[in-house]
Image (cartoon, rainbow, N blue to C red):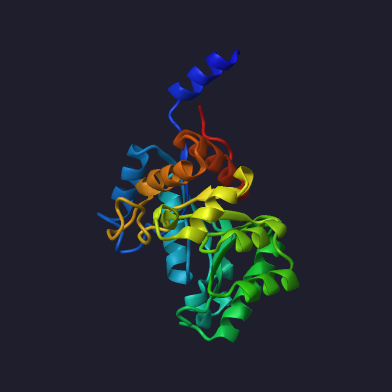
Length: 269
């Protein structure tokens, strides 16, 4: 196939958008879970990972995955919920369509759980990811040094991603040094988010994901409204604009990266 024919084929095939991190069980999701999933499909989103933050939400993620063939689940204990203990979710790890541990990590902005408890829960979930050979989804806010220190001490899982990346190029490089992927959310579309936007430009294509983190952080021009997986297309378009490439390129690259991270087969057809 010559280059012109390949270009024509690429343009005739709709891009596959993959929302690597969403919370469609959240009551703030517009019109509820199933309507949001349907809207995502209509927008060209072919796969979504629904992320657990405690036992209840992990069970909700598992239920979403059980009822939708284009949805996968994670189980984890968010740093806000660390006080409840990681033992609350360990029996869920082997449930069908669970593809990762997390989100897990540290959040020193809100401190909803004591910091020592957060650190213990993060370390325990790193150990679970390593033990079960599953990817780890990392949440870190205002806690970069401790996050990296704990990863180094426990052994960074072979597959991991810093979700909803909020750092700059310096933090990006520290993630990359540990073999991690970095996931960009609607923050990359905010004109004031200079550090995150610089990181979105600097990130190697093979280490990048996109996500909505819905119902939070809706991208421009939807900012201020509840987010949903359909809007991952706007996140990807914002990243594409920053990098000077087509949205279809970002869709294709990030979907392939997400499928590799989570161990999923390419879509049929």
